[in-house]
Length: 343
Image (cartoon, rainbow, N blue to C red; front, side, top):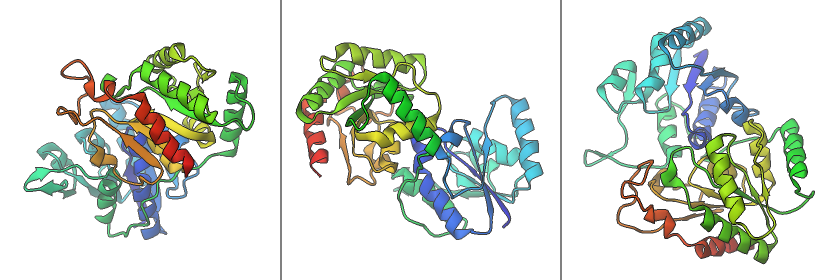
């Protein structure tokens, strides 16, 4: 095979969890030109990864965009496509580009029709089961006959991005060499994943007092997450920094995560960035099933409350009180952080 296209998943964390599958494809197909098709900001996230040769930005969802992209992909002459996400839309581009071999999970009849080689999703007793997303993506790669090349997540800090991150932190008041507690209180998935701002503040204040960590609140560069960061900042009593004008590029965010002594986050993309960079991380998990991310747990503490309604998988709490996260006490976070910092 001369040319292979890999369609990345859209969520930030899922794109990071796809890196073991990319590495397996590179090791198994060393002479193949591998391109990844993903959201434009994923290019900065994955820059420096040796497992692919080219990045194709996924811009536009209208039919005219699909047609234009299909022509571009067809002109590049891809012989096979690995479609990592489950949706029918993610399989449409390789289908429209007439790529002969199209491999992925077939969760419904439409998706199956768009693939040439459909893989049944993980089943148990005829029912779909939740497994680690790393394993889930590796199973798709294995369908091309390649072997695993480890399950480690892989991100790289770029020199220029590290300098920009240092400058951004210095302007915000972070001293050179100061130990940072990186706090990411937002979540693109929805409100159901958000630990309360007051809980974040109580945990950050105590971690500052006990361990001398400087809380640095780092929202995504959008109004909703910046507003959440402002609420956390307003509730904090101790010295802290809030990056309310964040750099929009993910390569700079990766470099900021690499600076952290500890990361405190909802169950969202920054968790997986931290794991990929070897940073200890405390994750507050609400409505999502922990089996999807039950991997590489040595330097993680994943905290959740065992309430009867979780994991519901809903983006908005269906009963309205968000008990799965409201009941998760800041004291548990401090204890989990103490364990990680003692290692």
